Image (cartoon, rainbow, N blue to C red; front, side, top):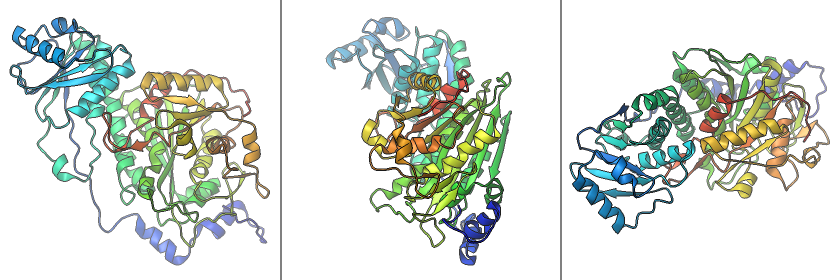
Length: 542
């Protein structure tokens, strides 16, 4: 965060304090007052269905979910229903020309004692990700059903039943945080999964699936909250509350003085224009039986609101910039899921939290900052701030944590959306064994990745005439240049990958999610860390 030139011989820490951290009196006063808003709003309480497992079908009532793979499944899976009920379902499916080949659904009413029979086609893909998706779609479709839900999963494996239950929990998520009338309606009744392998399904769900539902909800709540509610300090508070009582977890939050002492001029520079000071949040979970080769570090971009700073954005869509902390929410949500499921892993989530605002104290284009590892950064655009906070996050991880691998996740660039749309997040890595594990985790979790190149030309694109590197490259491969920039703050031998989730983090409502945050990355990173295999620490180049 040093200016381009200084005539006085100050140490780095003194220079930071004198030139960039010590705000004018008015701004400093405003910063002190900002942490506790005078008017506090609180989201309405979320609704959740309790999940239970049984081997026999309960009495008819509420909604029955009936998964079918083929027409013949009706006779076997629904054998507990009466002949009249099965006959009515069969006639309705025939009349509707129900397609068993692809995932789909048909709701029927007026059959037996059920309020609704919701028939879902599993399609040919019976993978865990596909079954969980089926559950998500069912959970979302049945959001307005307040009565009990029974899922008739007879004949399906314990794993399949648990995945459907997990998906239904994810699908029940609501993003209307401040619509008290909708969220405070009568509590929803429970969900019962009827399975031949009820005990096994219960163990799998309670051992992993339930924690995934909680991790997803936590990340989505943080992302969907408005920026006057979630800012760096309140993000930390929410995280402490979520992990309260969870064994094996330590939480540290570096404030401005702590970051000054470490020389984190990059994240401090990004937050200079805001009355709300930045934080570097470090959450470590070490499970029983975890390997001792060093933690897997997940670093997330946590820009709680991105106005663009002095390089200000236009007003169209600026409200969506509350989602610019989705990477941080997802890395912490993944660690929450791992810790609550007591996974035998060693993992650290680093949330690099800052608010990018224009102000008389804000960083300017052409300013020069200095990151924790000593590298200097020329600011080309203050709207390329996510890579600034991540520079100090990954440098801290590399210097202090002896990481087995570092994976950063960020809503970094619009160019990745142009390349991949909302079907894949972009994956960049110098280490192919690490990239392969992430791609496999993406396929297994349903959070899909597409590997992008890290071309040597990106180093030239980000070369500065005044500093070690500049924060925005020439026009062209914007996503690749952004990835290269972050990777420059990681030692070449440290296994590292960057995931750009700008096209995946939020969007409109559909069959899988309400409007707002998708929670993308929680399931991906949870699966990746759970199955991580050490990667050789060999220097690699772009």
